[in-house]
Image (cartoon, rainbow, N blue to C red; front, side):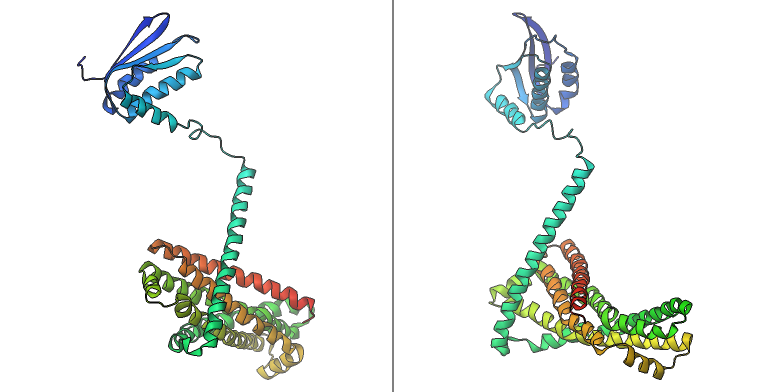
Length: 377
């Protein structure tokens, strides 16, 4: 065998087994050397001494094979030791030993119940962190808004009206169509069920209360969250990726005042108007379906609506609108500012903005419903 090649020999010395390793213990030669080491099976209780004095070269893979051999021998109750290792070789083997964690690759899978509880716990803690971050962002936006009100010249009118146009006027077709169709569905399904009891006339009550109190504002808010909330995140996130927001701060401009405040004010103004529009289109759809299915004319529908649905049903829906607009705008802008320098991050934060906005809208709507029910409205 050439002197430069890795080699291994065995010998008996003072009642112990001596392994002499020499040559180049590097990756290319380790297959045969490893097989030779595995064939050695000393009796339990017998000492094994590995002499490394003949090594000329040792790489990380070779050091790992030597360390693993010592570890496995000791696990079998065999006293194994290394002799005559050069300082560099000994340091490499010691570094391998320090970073060897044999328990990690073969660790047992956790109990499914424990894993589920761990997942829920992490999700709960993440939700609390999200709520805390949103409240902090609300406080920052409130302070900026109060400063702008004290100095009205700081409010950017042109961006404000631009956002009103993009979040309000361009949303009218889709909100109108969906609200009209929901009104049609409510009237048709309600009439079909109430006909069994001879109470078809109460279809008007069903459509009126459903659209004015709940469906109108919920449809408008969910559509705005999908359109405008995601657009806010994508726009601000792209600016974050392009370092435009850092440039604003360098120029002494406040991104909250320049980017967030106009969007928040725009949605707070626009969403109540969209809610009224959604209510009207839903009632129109319900009235047309009632005329087609129940032969209730539009005049009869309006008279019945005026007498059966209290005016507070309209105000209940309208009161929710500014709150929903504030939540959607804050979530969209905050998620945009959370983007971290990549297109993938923009997509991820945009998705989070839509999901969180719709979730908060529905939860807040439930809270409003409980409150209005408790006060008798």
